[in-house]
Image: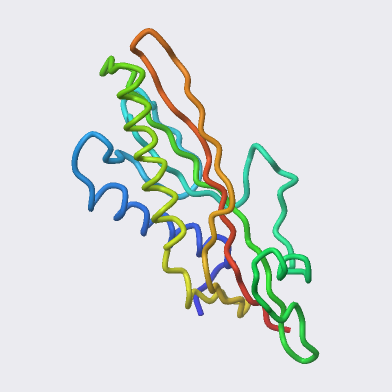
Length: 179
């Protein structure tokens, strides 16, 4: 067990994983410059490609963590115990990866910027869903099992050969809480 609450432990572990997958293992124009836990506070004109992993979504505060229900089981196509007498219960712990791809100073065409931005979005979704969180256990005994990506947003801004793309990749981690 590690000190702290499961969501924070997941965010830190996922940020470390994504730093490797988006910076260390990438070369070329779509290599991220900053990957970090919690809010990105740098200038995107200097740090052109970034990803920050957060617990929750600051833009959608009503998106809650919650216990897994029978309806969730049907949606997943899995049979999971939603609660057992003398046992624990399963939770969705939700969060966000905000990403940005700013090619403002590079003055790339709209088509080239869109291609590179979507490559970065695809890479982020691919590796986020594969983040190795199983085995993380917090000081309260809650255990992480699997990461899921369930939605994303991505939109273009700028113009006149100064384009950027921003968006969010929404994730939820399946965890188990003991009684």
